[in-house]
Image (cartoon, rainbow over all chains, first blue to last red; front, top):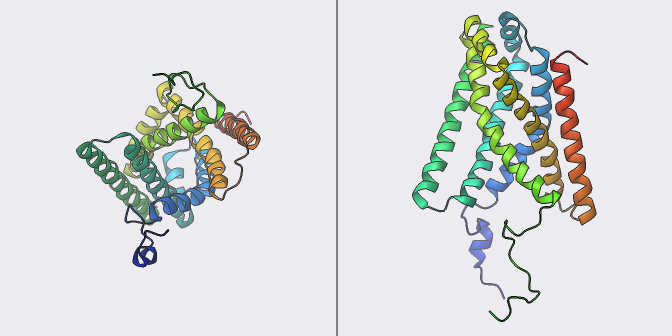
Length: 126
Length: 130
């Protein structure tokens, strides 16, 4: 017995009205983070204890600064989807739930912008 | 209350649920994810300090190399490798593979061993020992 209307199936948005997008983007960013995490740890190990000028010139390479930004932005996006699930699992007070979600997403957006501006500044000036 | 001693399955209340490797790994996956997210402000602050100049970079390094900073960095190193390895385990589950009980325990053990070894190798490298 089918209770769903054909329109509901065609839209494919399910009960949460956003379909698979949250779940799917969490997996896509997870796959992207496999090489990015390994690259990040390897890179940071490379300039551990290096003088400031060396680190800045490292960011002067477009490839390095691009991959660093990709790592930071994809990490923040992935982390933000994960923390959202944790909040939805454990915080059932509506006001607190929405407040925390806004806080996490807003703070993630702020971090993303600060990272972009900082790295771009070095990429262009360095 | 007559059926309280029957063999019907009970919901897994944490107080009476016997601890298993699989549930511990699952809890650590969430914990490491939250801990990594708590590290993102530090990562962005570090990028900001590098950009701000030699003095700021020096100051950031002092904070990060303080024993407490090193302890946090060790925690983030293990968390990033653990979440990475166990995340790959999750991706296999997402495509419907690895659900046999023996496989679950074996892949769990591999995750613990590999993420510990990667953490150890990273820190030995950081201290110039390898």
